[in-house]
Length: 94
Image (cartoon, rainbow, N blue to C red; front, side, top):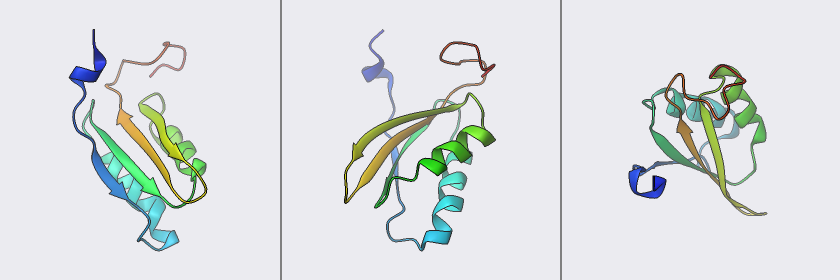
């Protein structure tokens, strides 16, 4: 199956203009509203790997995290919400 043809367009969540204390809640809310199989792109001016850990802790086995751009000035990642029962290997129960 060609997965590129089955992907939907990802909404962009730009965290750069938000004050630092508002970024994590905005990202968590954006992911929470994603339907199973939905995806979004997140842009920030720093590499917030703790956001990834927060998402995976809150939604174990349901978060797909694909870095698209990581450099000193900008960071961008594509996130997707797996459908329940579909995990990468099955070992985590997701």
